[in-house]
Image (cartoon, protein in one colour):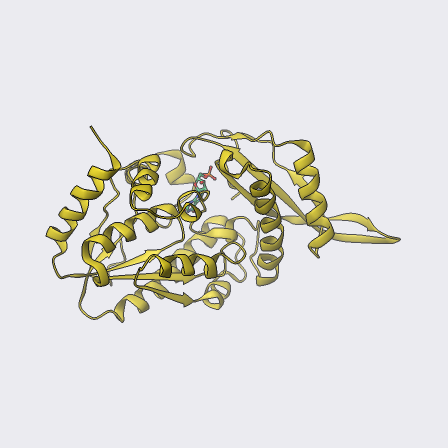
Length: 317
Ligand code: XMP
């Protein structure tokens, strides 16, 4: 008879036993899984947990600052690293989705490894791997494993001779949220939509540039804020904005414009394996579209993605 409270109690005891006075490094992503894993480890070993939170320049608007702040308030021993430029440099000239994922994964490992090396005598790598990630990385023949290599799962680079500790690897997502609640983690972190490791890089179709990231962040913030203020954010499983690699003609005053197009994506799902597009109210969509086009320089058209998964996927890349 599984309860979140008893899971926390046994897991913290097991972690104490297993880790003793060892040091652990853990990469925080801002997502639910790594945050819950970090807080569990923090309960077990306190300051011997060294968290690293990398700004890859591909997060949502303002997220790096606000999430880093939440982590500090939670008492976590966390170091933030601004590595935006390294990621942008690695992404320059790449437009293939898998190449972009690989570049991001590689730079993340480099940045993380540099930071981890600064922790003296570290023995363990903590990870927020959950049960479905384990299954997915085992089923090499499964469609999502071959279609997309999820870079945050899988082996550690062999130059990091660390043992791995994954306190959530028997749990499903809803159980992780319940554990997070039992640990009093704020709804700002527990309630957030899933967000892919490669971040906005796979929501910018084609080549990623800092300029496109900045435009997309503005449009996306308007979308998400409107979902929140309309009270539908929590009913949507995942939402995001996609920067399309086309320009379209528009008209502003007497002037012809030729600017970018974004697509809004909002889906209902249980586990991300299948998904239906959300039937958002037309009035809400109209407000979002107007607000984006009137406020975000560089965008003159907004479309709404009405594809379900399968055969479409949630992300466009
Ligand atoms: P798809 O697009 O495959 O997405 O329907 C299913 C879920 O997985 C997320 N996703 C990723 N997460 N690294 C991640 O950590 C990735 O490369 C990646 N690709 C997709 C996606 O956001 C959705 O929640």
